Length: 573
Image 1 (cartoon, rainbow, N blue to C red):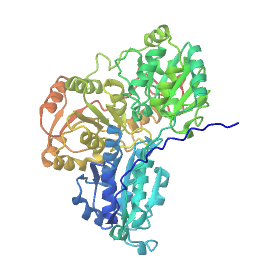
Image 2 (image 1 turned 180 degrees about the horizontal axis):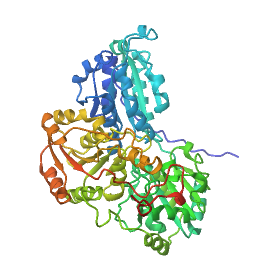
Image 3 (image 1 turned 120 degrees about the vertical axis):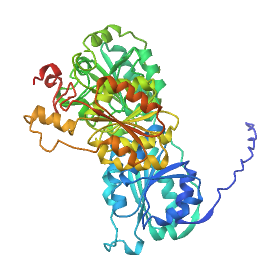
């Protein structure tokens, strides 16, 4: 028997142009790679070992911002990355230039912000000899980066640069350092662009089906949305999933602005300083769907007593986070955008109105007591919200003001809340706001800081003036390192040891930098001051003098639980 076999159709080969190979110095390879990765702006500070890079940089159409301290450069790159989802770039020279980046890299690492740091290194022949400004920055940064490279030749430099960008933005984003010896920047080699596409993990359908079954059975479910929702730009998917299933949403500190706070399914944020009714809802929940968050201690407190009645579904792009802190019933390794869409398809519509109304019925009115004297944080944040129509992007520092901004502003605009979460880095707000403003030059950007944190990178006022960046700065000035003072009040018998802090007269300081400022001491002047700042060209500092012993409530002591929560009514004197 003869079987006829059709002759296969011949498909003509697609002719692709061969990638262009260029013979370049190492410094130009670095610039070419940056250009091919789509970099438009970077923050840095030149020095001896990185000088060949700066020699080549003017040949390329990329904007460089000269910061006044490398730490600020790292924070600015971080702020830009969080605002845009693109990789932020910062640069430092060898030795102190590189080590000054470390705090900024650790900040980005803890909060999963994609940053590439380029550092100069002494020439290869001098490495290992304790040469001038030689530091093993690769060894120093290994614990606070996704990867750190020491480039040994110009021939490998192009591939390393592109690999650094791929690592920074793929999977769970984070910082990557590329350390380049000075003589490698001067050496010639062939360069071919090698930009790599990203392919996020999806998760298995069986996992989605099992998670959907848990969701369908739940009577008191909660969605706990974290920073991963923002990183994946999964705003629509989160909203659709919540609306389909009827499950109310709470957001972590870094998840704020992943869903409008005015949405009827949004409840608030949990944790150490979250509203009491939100923390108590977690205690009662029978299911928690956690998306793009890592169950850190500021959310959970004492793990053994946190959410004791709940089962858990956890979606995260990083498999290392599944079952790391909380044992989950269903773990799904996927990015939030894909994961939420697939989970919605595996879940049934439901109505949890009664559960939501029960939670809301326990809420206390936000804000200070009606008889509060002087300027309160609530007044300041409310004035900024009113003066900007809610369109501002707020970049906050770390401390009491950070918690007040999280509680009292009301974030309806997507990705409008940017702060240092995991590392809790004072000095973050001002330089990070520079990165945010560079990303969105036509939108209002406010840096909200305490009188301690603002002084940690206050030199960047000169960068604002030189770059013509328009950032409005609100200093909540209580004359103390406020959060530490609050802990000293509650747990150390008001022994205010080394927390009293002085600072400059910001209204007088501003003209020295070519900026404008105003001191605000009366409640009735707060809104007018914000309106003046918004109508004033350029950067402005408003120095709001608030009560010295203003506290953040409620507060769950570190390692505590809802049962140990401190509320305002419990504090006397």
